[in-house]
Length: 461
Image 1: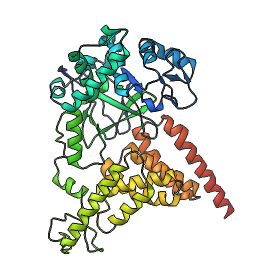
Image 2: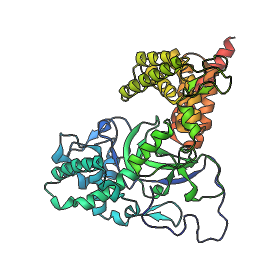
Image 3: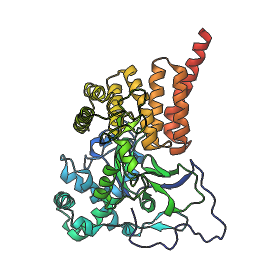
Image 4: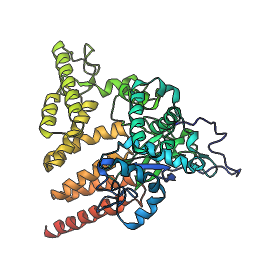
């Protein structure tokens, strides 16, 4: 998410005073989106303006977008009035999310958006044209060109009554490039992607697979929190993760190259041991339990031999696991997860990333069908992998603790639930801030309920 123009200084201000240190859990940036679009699958469930879930009513003109109240509709009208006739023409067809986002960007720029600045410090800011377009890379990327061609066709059809609004293909490609390499997925409290957005100021932030900051959301507002102490606010040394960290270095680098056109050279991606550990087998000698590479002749910890049979079994289990996880991208099936986990036992190391991914799928699948003891078992096994690969200060780890506590509370294990709730609060207060609604409206009521039930249990004893 780099800029095409060079900023003289990211950290200097007009004051000569030294910049204050940044502490873990400190919010270092808050920003409203330059443009955003609710994902179409949520359009009848969430407000198109504030993104809140609940009872919503459709716009009487286009009948495409929905709002939770008159105030949100009025607030959104400044932008929606320009797209409303285009959505009306498309109705009842569903407009692809990327096409609607491009439409909004085009209209935003046409109505003064070129002058809008997003600030990342008191004096440092960026405009939309400061974002990199990656024009040359996209021009030589057949998949991107095919996607852009299809979006151009959708926009042309939407805006047929206003053909001058559709930019020429060169200009459209530059807008598209800025969107795909600077877009954020807006996440709800459960870390589900509900919308796509462009934020100008935060686009200053580069990627690392070992980030020292995290992006979280409240409605459509983005917050950046430090998850490590820093000597000062220096945006050239602040990193977030653009991608899912629960992947091998090879896959992470491929994802970044395909989506953002750069090769990651962070310490985690260049560490050969990282790749080996993420795809490790477990030592055949049970009492050892070390991670091994099946290409070795023996375990380097206990010297146990690695047989051709173990190599073949490992390769079969890995292939089967990858196949089933790919087929369960949208919906995880508990019985399939169980088969994979059974086959992985004694073959894959507990921290093998494909084993961790399978546990994650099994955990969510067990919750979906109300198998609470099984969900608890999978979730507790999952903690170690989440902590290792996502890091100790990651929203997903905090949410995992909260889910485990919730299950234990339901199962009457109040003391154990309190432990997980406290861990969740410790992490989420850093990643979301103490005032975030996730803590105030979801976590704290669970803590209070657990405390009350624990007191009642002690009283009965």
